[in-house]
Image 1 (cartoon, rainbow, N blue to C red):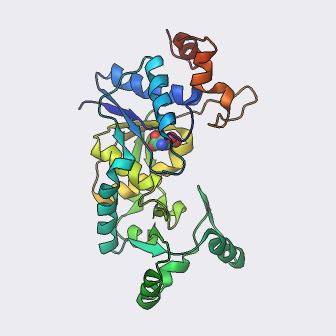
Image 2: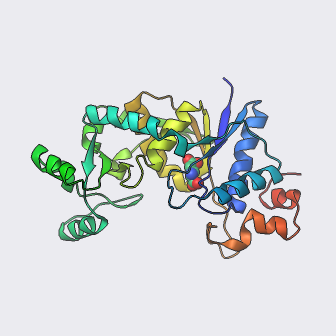
Amino acid sequence: MTIVTRFAPSPTGHLHVGHAYSASLAYKQAREGSGRFLLRMEDIDQTRCRSEYEGVIYDDLKWLGLTWEEPVRKQSEHMDDYAAVLDRLFERGLIYPCFCTRREITVEIARSYSAPHGPEGPLYPGTCKSLSHRERDQKFEQEKPYALRLDMAAALKLVDVSQLFFQETDKGTIQCNPLKFGDVVLARKDTPTSYHLAVTLDDAFQGVTLVVRGQDLFDATHLHRLLQHLLDLPTPRYMHHGLVSDMKGQRLAKRDKSVTLQVIRENGYSQSDVRKLIGFKI
Ligand code: GLU
C-alpha cells in the first residue's frame, strides 16, 4: 500500500519551528516509504484565516525544501461536502441542533452538581438535546443561530467501543474512548462544519494512510476514530509527535512572533540551520 501523508495547517498565523518539524516529519515518512505527501489548508474559520498567511505558508514550506502535490485541498471550497455528511447524520438521528449561547452553557454548567470535563473543556450539559419538536421548530422559525452536536449516546449505541482502536506508531494499538468528548460540536454556528468533522472526512477523501501531527491532537483521534466508524471511512495509522518548546519549556504558539519561519528566514538563517535545530540531518 502506498503511504500517503499530509501536512494540514490552518492559515490563521505564521508557521513556527514546531510546524516545520511536523511538516518535515510527515514529508520524511512519505519520502522514505516512496509515498505521497499532500498539503491541505484547514481554512474553515473564515474570520481568522487570511490569504496572506496562506501565501507565507507556501513560501515557508518551499524554503524548507518540501514539495507537495497540486492542487492543494482547501477546506473552504468543500463546505457542500461537509453539509451533505451532516444531513446524513441528522437523518440517522446522530446529531441535533444546539441553540445555546456560550453564556447559557456556562450558566447551565455552573448550576449542575457535576460538570465533567473533556479534552476541550467542560462537557456540554445536553440542554438542547431534550427540546421537543415544537420547541425546536419555534427556534428555527425565529431564525436562532444553531450549532450541530453529535449525540454521543446515540452514536455509542452503534459501536462497541471496547472494539474501537487505532494504530499509533511505536505504541501499537490504542483503545478509543470518544465518550470523553461528550456531545461535541460537528458544525459551528458560524461555519457549517468543525475541525473534527472536516479533518476526518478530508483524510479519508484524500486517501491519507498515515496522519502525522502533534501530541496535542492525540485525544482528538479518539473522536475521529468514532466518526470514521459512523461514516464507514477507512482508518489511517497515526503518528503523534512531541511538541517543540521554547527555551523556557513552553510550547510554541502562533503568537510567538520571534520563532516564525518567516522571521528566521529574514534573519539570514538557512534551511539547513532549521533542519538541524529540529533534529533532521542536512
Ligand atoms: N489544522 C490543524 C492545526 O493547524 C492540524 C490538524 C491535523 O493535523 O489534524 O493545528
